[in-house]
Image (cartoon, rainbow, N blue to C red; front, side, top):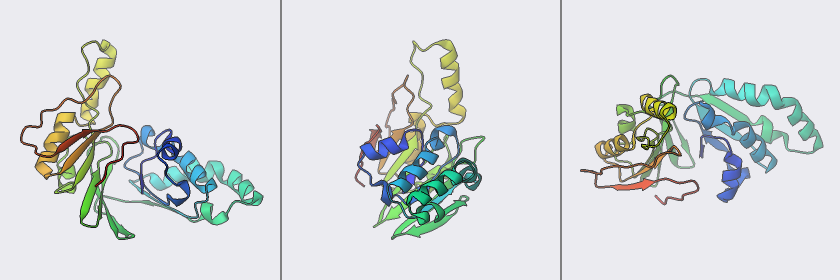
Length: 237
């Protein structure tokens, strides 16, 4: 399952060696631009690679986004491609569903659960994936959030938004003001460690880094592993 479809997602999937035709499930955490700009490209790219169906879930507004960005704008072009010989089912067998916190499904033995996270003003979800007795939680964007702590309780890995890092001293004042304001919508690296400790998470992966900052944390009583995530990292659970 692919979680979020930011700008460049198809390029990064190919760099990671992913088989686009086999990516039939997408979970969107929220609809901010940096998490969905690559959505139409993914729909097209995976279809052209041979995907035969697509199932998408996300918060309120996801189905409407699909209609606006894909169906309304590209349906005539898809029909033209189908006339050329592309498989109709790969385009038409698409199910897009708005879900709420508490939603769950089983996918080939993996239980997928959605939980609320705090990222105002957007409706935002985190997801927990449990398979073979192991669990991974992906927060999407979130501020410090008790709901995320509960979603991540006793998980093996928590991949969490740590965007609200303290800006470097030499950052321009206008940029500094923007970065500091982000703390209203994103967790700081230290808050991520604190949430992981409270949730008894085995490993925490810090993501969503700004170019001006790298996470600095004090692990304190947290006994788990802290990983500063980078593009194309592979983490074995």
